[in-house]
Image 1 (tube, helix red, strand yellow):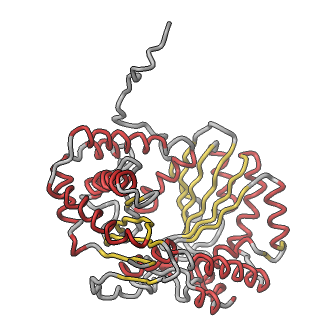
Image 2 (spheres, helix red, strand yellow):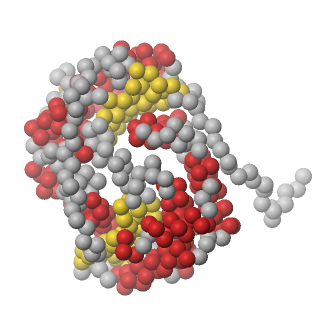
Image 3 (cartoon, one colour):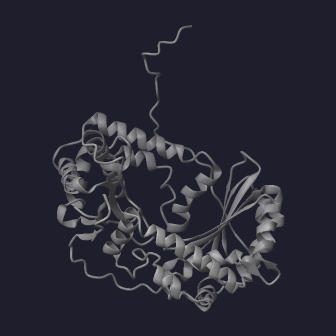
Length: 426
């Protein structure tokens, strides 16, 4: 049979997905454990999630350094011994810290879970925070920050978040070299004692795991004492927004980094999916309108995109690109022009269908492994989203109409609501 390569193959539009069910348990101490059992390979990921992000900091930077230092020493093991032990079992450790929460993540073969669990418990209950390792981590962090702050794109991101939320708010706060230099070991220890030690946590277990692994985890982590007193946050009020653009001049720079956007809402907002599709059409994928205009037609940039970061308490909309200085103002004008077109002209049926098919395919493509499925489920498990948020995702994307997009762009993307940050110059 000869293939006709001039004719594209038939395709089936994705309408719905089927996900493995989450099996929820409670450890002996009351900590929730959520099991996503997918037996593709004999590996698993064990994640312990704490409400220990920068939202609860009293000293800037203490949340990040506390989590990173958990693997730097315990009374019975040095940092080198901890690393050697993890390597011996072919495991991998991640220590994450964000605005809302922090997590300790261990990847390992399922058969080695009994071996790595005691180490995990030891790090969560007996970290020693040695001064030398803290100094080393601080020096590495400072070197990276000093390099990053010389990059227009990095500085633009910092200034943009500060513009939206304020420099002292957890969602607007970024690591600053001066704050890192001032951080002491006592500040790290205080954060651990107040926010992490014996605080409630959740466990998310994904991969080739069964009730047997749940019992093993309960034996180690289910016996930890859990405090019942309320953990207070240290969030300052957001400053009054003056609405003025931010310009950080860099005379020696040949390029400008542009950031445009606004505070928005969380995934639970009734207009979330309408805004999600509107964002995708504007700048959310490679075939978006901003890419076609500013990259392909004007040749001002290698890439421009828009996205909708979402936190537990808030979210924002962001357009970002890097262009030559002389093209800065024209790029800004073209961005606003594309937004006005979205507000005044209905999206064609073909374009909307293309975007919705792309979003459906991208969503399904992000569910290939048990760990990716667990990452998606965390939206439901940690942010109190509806249980059907994932299974109805594609349906809600396809329900958005051209009229919805015009109304959404008109309501949320007005010129006076968008904030502008430029690093470089015009």
